[in-house]
Image 1 (cartoon, rainbow, N blue to C red):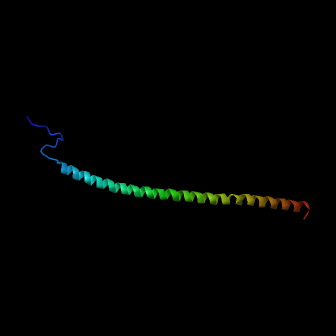
Image 2 (tube, one colour):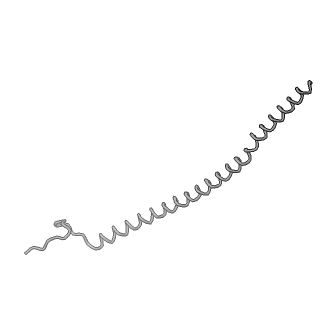
Image 3 (tube, rainbow, N blue to C red):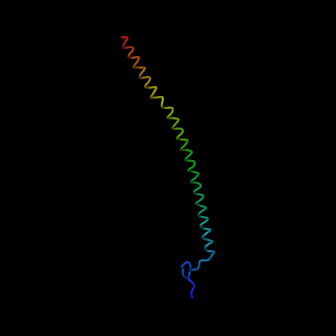
Length: 91
């Protein structure tokens, strides 16, 4: 009676040493990927901080600009009122 090969590889023999070596190689690759992911996560955190800083600066600029149209409108109305007063007085 012949024993069936559980891996279905026929005459190929895979030993524990080969499996261990491949496991170590995979572990080294995973460590490399983990380091790269850590670098990407750190860069992402820096980008998020920069984005928040830019948003805050843009909001500050927008808050500083809103009075300009209002001031221009007030000056225009004041000019109109003065022109009407001058016209009514006959000047």
